[in-house]
Image (cartoon, helix red, strand yellow):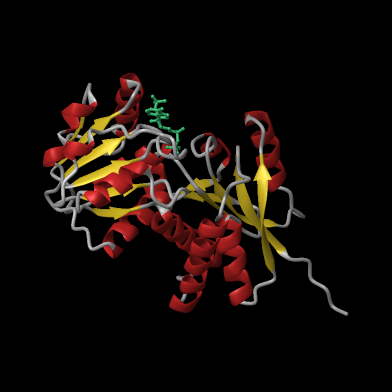
Length: 292
Ligand code: ATR
């Protein structure tokens, strides 16, 4: 019998146990009848990351593609042979492709994934006023792509609990991307949510059901889109309040799906067909409701 061991794909980060990526990618491998499996690779610290990345270069390593999640999306840049121009501009990668020569190339599909989901939500960003909460890795990808859009928002107001983290992030993004339309504000009230067209939460506030919301619920209104990158719980308190006010609301499951579909496209070096994409999305929706 001719038995080929499966190609290995997976996600590196800390933690990774909660990740829905295995569900989505294994569903795609199955649908496409590809002999591959997607695994979790928890890496304790940057020393473990270094060893893992060095091992990735070995000729007999069966790993051909990876996702990278918190906290290594920036650290991993040091180990790449090449970086896609968009990922280079954003300054973070979430997808690695390892070719047969064991050359490692990095991509960022978080930013494009977010934009794809907004397009699906029929959200036109041109000249819009965006209010954004948070200054972590997700904010980095979102701010970067919003600033790179040819027909992008008019203004992005950015609030973070620790103001200096927002200043540092903006300065860093500003090295490669024009960020003149972004303004860091001191207080959450200065976001002027009541005048915003889009409010985006990239903080972890809302992950626990007991979490309060960062903005004044009275400022939420029906003529806005409220986007929370959190997808578990499916409806954070922010989204619930916004929905009650008649706003268009969305959680981040669509962004997760699009970044995954784009990552898979890089591994397969082709765009996925609609049927497989539907299977991936369905698997995510089921897993996010029932727990994976
Ligand atoms: P990710 O990569 O998912 O964006 P992260 O890099 O850990 O995650 O970023 C978390 C973000 O949530 C940060 O902006 C953090 O604010 P600080 O810079 O002040 O730490 C924000 N955040 C986390 N807990 C928060 C809380 N209780 N209130 C307000 N902001 C919070």
